[in-house]
Image (cartoon, rainbow, N blue to C red; front, side, top):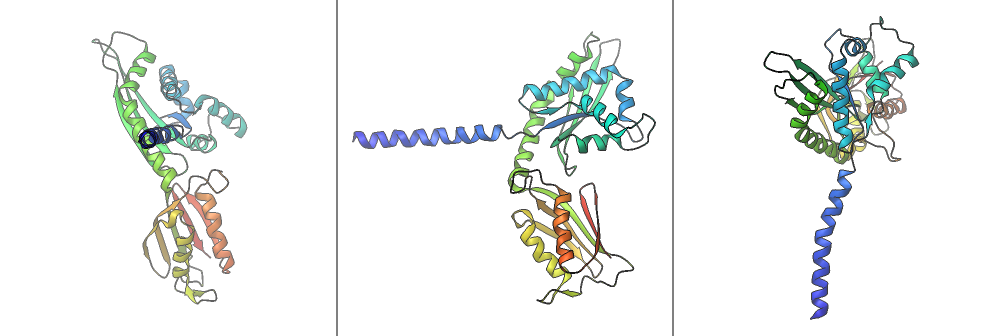
Length: 292
């Protein structure tokens, strides 16, 4: 009887402890984050920050909110300076400098923060709009709007902190949930395969020893190489085939970061093995393959 009671108690301990342990493991799985300022089209991200000390303070406060919750963060200001120096960029150069910083940041997620400072005779306020995106694909993860409320103060750092506090919990919960889903099920990319107008190839041509068309061979290859065999074909013709959703893993078998460009290298090998020359490019979240 005592032995049965002991086994029962032991079983209850295992049931109770195991979920807690799993939850503890999940909470350590957090993406590295970089907070960047929102910029309008044509605005230089460096000029925006240099001209507004309040926005610099606000960005620092938002970064601190992530730091205080155990996230590893990338210092945007440090990355801004190092990228300018490394690439020899001047303030007058017209290019998408923000994209360059994001690509070189090493962050898995970037949070774009739009800060609106509202001054009035009845009190000052700060509104913060946060949008988080997966760095590798640009896919949206979560968004929120926080507003500090009106106070008779010029301490915009405190107002920003208050605005962030009001929306950060739900923002992080949604972002973290979507990040877990990416880890578990992979991230989504689009693959657009087309035939150049001057090419002799058609996607209905047969390749390989088994006589499959290029279209059929591509689908079999995708089934083997998409993460957990997850892919969807939007449509195909003799000259174009679109996979509107293909899952790729967050990490490769060696634990290294995996991205759309690396998946493109694998797909390039498929065409090369079948004697087909291609051009390959990446635009945002889309891998573009052109058969020559």
